[in-house]
Amino acid sequence: MREGSFVGKMYTVVMDTTVMGWRLRQILLNLLSNACKFTKEGEVKLAPREVSNGSDFVEFAVSDTGIGMTAEQQAKLFEEFSQADATTAQRFGGTGLGLALSRKLARMMGGDVTVTSEQGKGSVFTVRLPGG
Image 1 (spheres, rainbow, N blue to C red):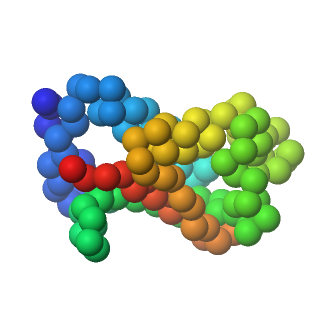
Image 2: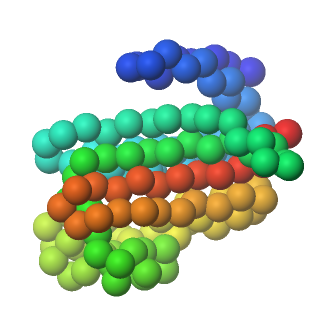
């Protein structure tokens, strides 16, 4: 196992080197990369937390103050080869596979990736996985 700290509030996260640990790493790298790509000015945050509501989960919220999305754009966001719209693809590039693959990896581990967003104000992508 390997420990690392996040800048800002100090969190210690234990990242294991099992397949599940590498999958989580890939998901978080993709979400953080996207957040940085779509945030010209402002901030990108990663906030881990434990959730106990009858069953134990861990959540990682990647939030940004970037361009945000409409409800229509969010509806197709996790489809393969899909991006928010054609102008987004032209302006920012990408294949439209990262979010689809991230969600598939999370679901393979018994979790999910979800999004909330408001156009012009930013987005929050949440990875929720079983904690134990």
